Length: 258
Image (cartoon, rainbow, N blue to C red; front, top):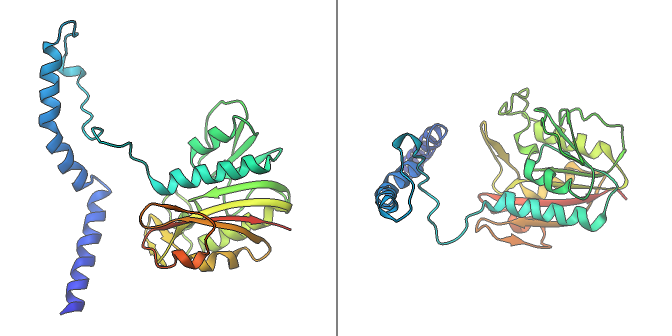
């Protein structure tokens, strides 16, 4: 009976995620509930002295921003701030990022020259930022040639086809090997990915046991480990096993080649 109930819950959860790929049911319900306030504000605005006329064709309802606090996504927000601070601490002459968030590399490029590598080239003209096409499984750099590298919340996607890449169950492992290959003596690699109960959630991402990641970089030394737990809190200077029981944690690994 318990097994049947568990299977039913899993089916419901999977069904929700399939629906969410098109439209989040929770978001849709919240938006519908917000419409009365939107329509009330629209009517009141039109009644104010000096208000411009509102044409229905110009309406653009934004329904979910009336919150008591500014929301943020813990994994990406904390990892970007964590990595930017470590790059700033070591002040490399040049930094290479592989596939991380555009906002992160754009911010870095304000004070350190950055080369951004992605299978989907970034077409942007910005001082200090160079974008080149490249695969995380075949980086366009010589062995042991880069003093500063980052790859944040990327390797867990490799081999799942989400971004048009070839399917490969060993995608994350191979990506780790390729990142390790290009780190120069004395160079550093900043690496992050989801951690906790190991699983593949096709085709979005994999979640890895945080204790298994250092072994993927056997030529590098783990200089420090931080992470984001299930509560969305940044935990500094911890051991990987402290996030092993997470459902959806984020492991932040700083490696160095001695």
